[in-house]
Length: 359
Image (cartoon, rainbow, N blue to C red; front, side, top):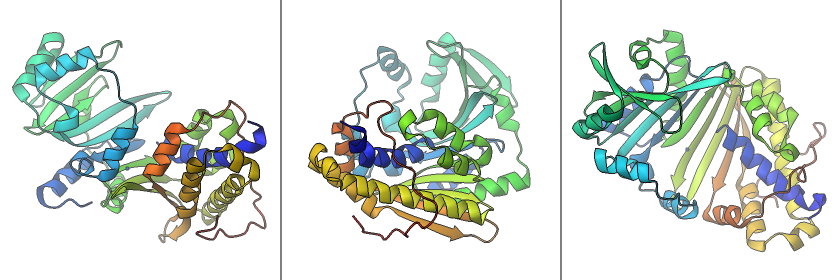
């Protein structure tokens, strides 16, 4: 397929990759309290916090579609033995998890708080076979080696249904860490905005999302302009909420500069327009599978880019709908040839406003 024919598909992939790298509340009573407690334990210097409520996700029709679509991993003998020895199956027994990523130069560490159904005696016995046990501030901390790695995982039970885990050398640091009131308020504000989403990620400015995007995107889909604008954002949130057989994805980029938000909004609207034009190109009509082309057009038609003014900060928001048709198109689509999918850069001046529903 020639380069021109990849413009539409490449631009669609560009949008998806951009937000995948940045890289999904109906809680009340004890469930809402558990969510808040888990997020309150996240370290204040984290670069990224991810959260998932599996209790809610397990009942979503879209998740069933996603599970059917995703490749099934091969049976792992080691995990099968773990399941037998501990009685813990994450697909069945994990209720919620909050994960913090801390960056240390080019390295990173993870800290997680998991809520679920744990058999403490079995898990403790399993960890004692290959690991070590130590005491820290009243907590019994288990440290076990990671198969095929020099790293170790440390964990402790915070209560009957909650565990804290990390791959950092000292779990005790996280258990005694106290956040500054300003840091805590910044994180809590974003968590509260995402209270309606059973799965989400919150990324701080120092996570360098734009630089990460530039490093991960295939050469033909790399956009220095987009990467530079993303690096100017102070916060990025990505949230997903299942709605029957589809997933509503909302990405929100926040900063103090009106100019940055305006440029980013114009660029994303331009990419959407360009992708629509590419998909309607006669060559693309001939060479793309009709069902795949229709799924990509549906994604673009329902996409919405808007600007928000929160007083002290400004935001650009992107809303996408991931449908079963899009999953099927992604499964059947041929991979893009390396360096052969370079969408043209939209002009930053004289750009027409995108009208929703245009194809």
